[in-house]
Length: 373
Ligand code: PMV
Image (cartoon, rainbow, N blue to C red; front, side, top):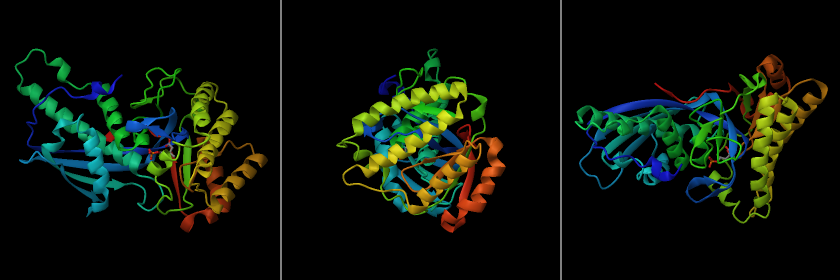
């Protein structure tokens, strides 16, 4: 599939105004995306669990405007005007205008809110960009349907957006906003990046993992220990760029698809020990790449390491299959089977909560993707 597939057939912007609301979840990568080519093309395939509770809800109001020269929009977070979100959205609009020609025909009011606290160290770019992309796709669909309703042409079928195209294009757009956002539309496992063993996988958008997954992974839990609620020390744009002249980058880009293949086997067999080994190694590799770039960064905090050691000690003395993964920051995601929930929450409350900023953690689990409200 090529980019051109997502260039819309001509339509008239004949709807005066309206609004659409979508809620879209965050996701947590098991095999990490770190390093990209031009136009947000990933250097390697990645695979993630879609989350359930951590999500962004966005309403986009649109109303026709006269001046078609510029984009015009306002952004509100929890009801408050958010000027500092504007540059990112302006860049996003510029990137996707070729695929959404109506963007300069309307003024947009974008109202957004997150289910998780703004200053939790949890990135809202994945859930935020996917929710916004879905709202924009709903507008495109409404414009096409309006044309369809007034058209006398018999060749009207191709103008209708099918559900699968709708989701694929929304994921394609979300990717142009923030790479990993393209994995936030569906659930419960999403692959982004062409992988020779995964049918339909693409560098351009995320696809739902197309094969059966062992029951061991049903309703898997993700409890996020908030070690550091501050702004990320290294933005992902800077981080991805550090992979360009990185001495170990090429090896890493070869390792990731192999880890995806190994995970495919694990999803088939349900081998939780193999799952733990791949997921923890991926998390530490991501951080190792940042420690060995120039300039170099340590994004873990002392409490991140304390938690990792406690998880390892707990596993060594029990039959637990809990493991950890990390984003490009200090917070720890604890992944574990649902059957262990009570024991893990006990472990957190007894031994780990002391390492969390203000004792905060967020209980989440695998989810099934975005929803229109
Ligand atoms: O989507 P970005 O550009 O913010 O990059 C996200 C990268 C990681 O979260 C560190 C890994 C991943 O695959 O989600």
